[in-house]
Length: 302
Image (cartoon, rainbow, N blue to C red; front, side, top):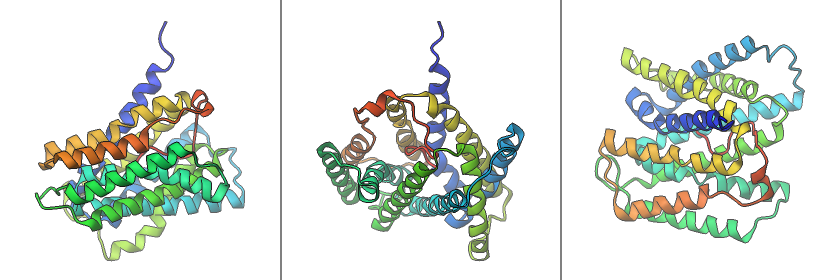
């Protein structure tokens, strides 16, 4: 009998593999981070709106004012996270930024404890400590794509992106009753509107190749990737999602090494392993046996 999880596994794996190549697409476009984020919002948002209209999901959707405000607020955090993460690539490297960015699941748990009163277990505190130690090791030992030590500004931007994405995920948890495709469409639309004025200072690429890279980012790495994620995450156990999410940073590191010649030092490698082991280790709770369908997957790129 065919395993009912085989298709969702392939869909989630494909989405995570695509996530790992986002950094390369961003750098190849040659555009500044705000322009890249705008293009991603515009193209991805339009396609998700068309997809949702074709499916008839807008027909019976009657959002409350609170839902819309939360959705827009989450969208601003999501888009801000993209701007910071994309800017960090050129200041450190794709692999370093992506791994440091994966501290966001730990930040999300901290937010839940701070704002929702959820208990933080000893294991989470230990994992947070391990992840922090890993970030410190990476900061002191990693090299950028130019062979020089990474700039701390790049790591700071990646951590800032992780904080904003954790905030977006936190808001999405309050909007679980909204179909995630609709939520993403609203958020990307809001992001495109907010980022449009930035084009006066950071314009879109004038060359055809640069525009094609951004078109690829908006279609494949946003609309298609989101459809794959949302079609699969609600059908997979949390442990499977966490395990397969390793593909995202691993692919990013491999792409960084093969396409951009990034040299991985052994202390940097140990630091990366520490961050990933701490941030992506599945938590053995009752929730692992239930299916999850968050508005924005907490371990996806975004």
